[in-house]
Picture 1 (cartoon, rainbow, N blue to C red):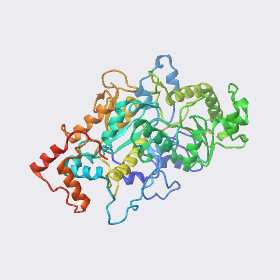
Picture 2 (picture 1 turned 90 degrees about the vertical axis):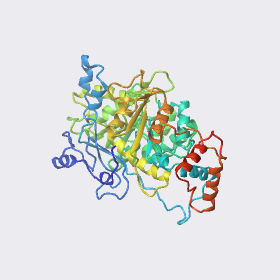
Picture 3 (picture 1 turned 90 degrees about the horizontal axis):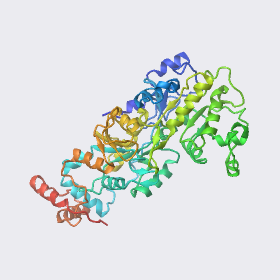
Picture 4 (picture 1 turned 30 degrees about the vertical axis):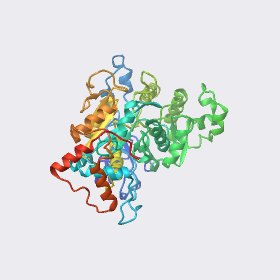
Length: 524
């Protein structure tokens, strides 16, 4: 399994970045300035001591998709529907890197030194049950899950019922009352992480913390160290502006700001009074927009396409003219993910940001004669999984109350999209489970990107199978019997602070553990 290593996090540039810098090019023949990342690199947040460079809170991760679009192939009459494998291989090039943020290490000093934190009755009983099955507990602390959300746990705002039960099991409603760490790794976007976690907590009936949650644009917060003025595209209303500002971008422009400045730039757009009141117009002939960030799905393809095209053809992102050589003066453009389809409440998956990008690439090629140079975040990009490793390590430490970052040997990715969830997990060395509640259709495994654990009817079946693989076929998925005298005695000992637990071994421990695996009861 791919490991998350501090030395990797403290690398300031990708291995090929030095060559690009020394030649004054970004790796594809186009220069950047102001400390911008290599055009085919992805920045992500990093944790631990910052490296000594100009971007102390980010690192650049080698990309796995081409920075150059291949729209000409897509336009060929014999290549209208090229395989997903061919598309994927063309997104970001090997050897490039993407900046991601460095997660901040949580403090472990909030507890009173020398005193254990107070535990509720449930925790005391669960601890007593776990004392009877220490080998199983050890295995449980060496596994974790990463879940896609749409098509796995929910359809839009509608719960997939098996998703709620799967999370209950992982949050401790099982034979030993033990929690299995899990994170949420989604190509979804368009809301602040806190708002989306609150929404998911209500839908799923289980708490979802921002500390275990990654959206497609979450790692893009690292780009705030590279760009001052950016155009942010996508999402409802002005939500993506709020997201970018929360990420630390100093000057955030959205398409409505530009339309409010000059309505003729989008001739087919009806600009409403509420949009005008919320817009921030200025003279964009005197503003250099340094990068375009597509955070979420466009709600107005025509307007967004037009403004993006104008900026990419303008000299250094200054509207009002077309550069004699738009390629050499072209600003960078980033997409938060590349999925073509997304499962929603509709019975047939809807088009997503990947189709928006492909359409724009074809238009750009037709108008300029050049392929569009762009960078794509999200699954299956390695930078997203590297960032997920960091988040998982911190969440493991919090769930299991360990003092340092420890990654489990067995991570299970559960997803519905073979072209993002499964191929990304496979490439990163995780175990993968494909469910049939979202994008994937058909009874069998995906032929080009098969899930290593196989195909499951739903997320609950996948979770149970993976836990049985690690914890044993006899592991129970119902809560322990809270009235079991052995557990009650153990809990009383722990409450009294003798610290010795149950002290049972061998056959006695086996008999007590068997007795503890009783019917589910409600523990108050």
